[in-house]
Length: 166
Image (tube, rainbow, N blue to C red; front, side, top):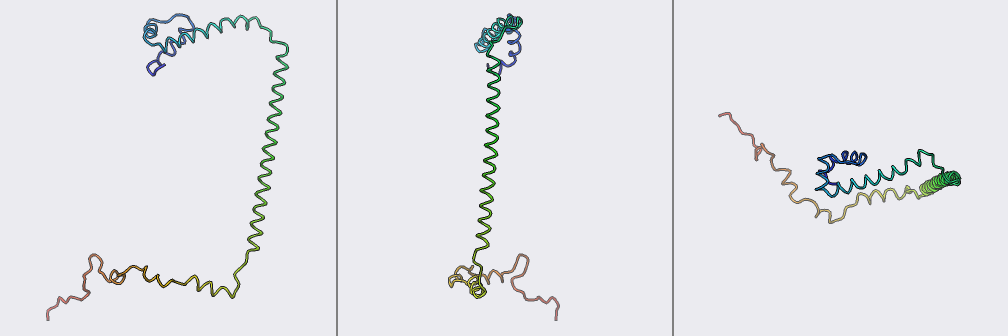
C-alpha cells in the first residue's frame, strides 16, 4: 500500500466486511494491485471469522487437558520468574561484596603507603623548583621589547611636551 492509498484503508475494511466495494474504491482497486491484494486478504480473514462464529456461539468444548496445560504453563512461568529474581539478588549481593572488598583494599593500601620523611622534604622542594639549563632557551625572545612597546593610543616616546612658550 502506497502513501496515496492510505485514504482508502478504512473503505477497504468496510468493503471487506460488507462484501461489496463502493464505486470509487472499485475503480481504485482496478488500477492498484496492492489495494486489491489487501482487499482479498481482508475478505479471507472475514470468511475465517464467519466460519468460527457458529462454534463460539454454540460454546464449542475445549479439549479436557487444555485447562491442565494452561495451569502447568502458568506454574512453570511463575517458577522461572522466581528463579530469575533470586538470581538477580545473588548477583547484586556478589557485586556489593566485591565492591566492599575493593574499597577496603584501597583504604588499607592508602594507609600503608609510605609518607614523606622530614629529612626528604627539603630535597623534594628543591627538586620541584629545579629548572633545566635549557629552560632559558624556551623563553620568548624579545620579551623586553614587547614590554616596552607602547600600547595603542600611547606615544612612542614618553617625553613630556611643553606647550608653554618661554
